Amino acid sequence: MHNIRWGDLQYLLSVANEGSLSAAARSLGVNHSTVLRRLDTFEHRHKLKVFHKLPTGYKLTVEGQKLLESAVALESTVKELERKIFGQEMKLEGLLRITTTDALFRLVLGNHLAAFHQLYPKIQLDLSLTSRRLDIPHLDADVAIRPASELPEPLVGMKLCEIAFGVYGTPNYINSLNGKHPLDSASWLVMHQSKASLQFFERISEEKVVMKTDSFEPLLIAAEKEMGLALLPRFIGDSSGTLQKVDVEIKQESIDLWIMTHRDLKKSARVEAFFDFMKEAIKPDHLRLAGFGN
Image 1 (cartoon, rainbow, N blue to C red):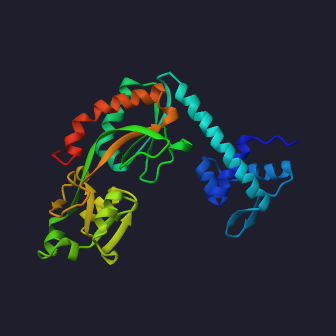
Image 2: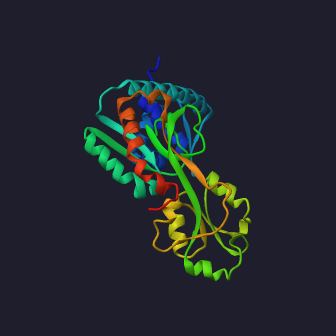
Image 3: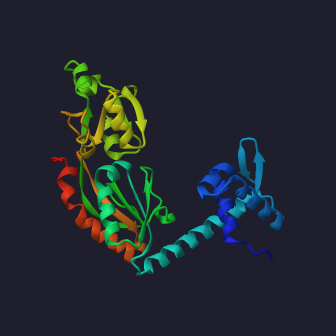
């Protein structure tokens, strides 16, 4: 019987998911030669061809696909065990992975994380700034602070406050519309996969969209460069010294800001401490996030 090591399977999963050695190496935080060596060693030890090495990348063989299916199931079990162990830890020290968006960190949460560090200096913060879809079940993060309409299983959390939206542009760009209604005459800057944006931009034809991004920060910059009008959280738009709010009716004027975690992690001392701290720390920001002043 061949003893299969979980560490080897992590390399195979990464190559299968990323499609190339270089991408897998970046994902794993190692160099290209390490991934190649681990892959070659695994195939040699088990006398199994896992990948076809093609000019376009690495493609699983039939045997490799069967192995991958088992590895994915094993990964899910290992991740669940890691969450349960983490969730039982009672020490206020160690690593806490946090994910939020770049704008929330820059304009709201940066000061709060610094204050949390002062209270709990032995908790090491690992911060990920991204607007992509969360993968907390696979431990991409222990805690997320993100806008959301609702929390999918297996996430649990609490609403911190509301985030209001508005349409923003430069005075020069707004004046260039010559009094015409923005929906009829403006060019638009759009967020990918934003529920608020999708509902608002149902009223705008696709040809009027001049740029799409996965973050509000590029939308802010593009609007300041007079590329068009942007639907922004008001705390972002109001932070600009260049933009002004346009009087346009918005179907969904606000969205809830949540702090969330996996249900297996909610009893972790680090997670509980962060939840309790953030619930109180963000209260002075409620009015600004809801669009009532700075």
